[in-house]
Image 1 (cartoon, rainbow, N blue to C red):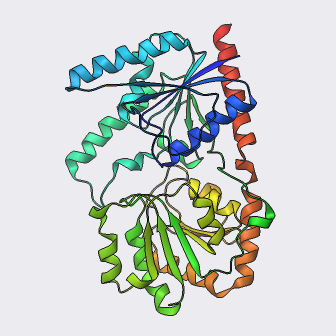
Image 2: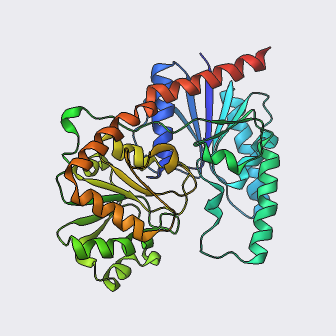
Image 3: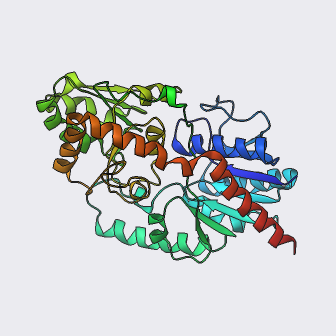
Length: 372
C-alpha cells in the first residue's frame, strides 16, 4: 500500500479546492487502496463542509506569531508530521507562495507534486495595476517559476494554464466531477431560472453579470437570476442590483451542501468570471444537462465549452454578447435541450474514475522512478 500525504491550508471551507480534494482523496483511498493522509494548517476543530472518506487520516498543525516564528514553526511542524507519516509521495494543494518553498522545507526524500488550482491572474484584484505592483508581480512570478522546477511534477488544470509557466515538469490533470446524476433526475430546462455559483469577489465578475442581466430582465421580466456563494458585503452586489433596477429578479444565497438541487432546477447556467483555474461549476451544471454560458476568460471555460455546441463561449468582458447568449437560450427551448444533452455527454471525461486513474498512474510512475 502506497502512502500519500496531501498538504493544504484547510479543508473546512466550501471552495472548489476543498470539494475537489474530498472527491479525489476519497476515491484514491476507497478504490485504489492508498493510505491517504491530509495535513491542514490552523484548522483546529472546524467541521468539514464536504464529505470525505472514513479511510482518510487527518493532521493539523498550529502556526502563529511574527513572520520569523511562523516560518520556523511551519517548517518544524510539517517535518514532524512527514516523519510520522513517512509518505511515499507528497502532493501540495496550496495556491499561496509558501507552498512553492516546500521542496526546500521538507527533509524527506520522496516525490513531491504541486497542484495548481488557480490562474496567475488571481493576483489581479482590480481593473488597473500600478507600476510598482507590476514589478512586484514580475519578481514574484519569476520566483514561483524557479521554485516550481523543484517539484517532481507540477500539475495544472487546463491546457490554457500551461501558458502561465515555463516548465518541463508540467502536466495537465483536470478536476473530477462531483456527481453525475441519473437521467431521471436531470433538469427539465423548463424553469425560468438562471443560475450562477461562486463566492462574491472581483474574480467572479458578478458586476458584469448583473449589468448583462439588466437587459435580459427588460425583455424577460418573469425570469429569475439566482447566485449561490459566500456573501461579501464589500462587493455591494445588493446595492448594484437595486441601482440597475433588477433587485426583484436577482437573489443571493450563501453556500449550500445541496447545490445539486439548484442545478436540477436551473434552465441556464452562467459564469461571468474574469479568470478561473478551471471552472468546476460548469461541469457540475452540465452533468445535470444544463447548457452553460461563460466569458472566455483565462483559463478553463474554453477547455469545457464548445461554443454553440454544448453552450456559449463569449468574448471576455463583452457583456452585450453575454446578454444575447442568455436571451437566445431563453427564447429557444429546442436549442436549450440540444445544448443541454450535448453538455452532459461532453463532460463524461471528467468522471472521478477517469481522473483518479490519471492520478494513480502519475503517483505510481513517480514512486517507481524514485525507487530505482
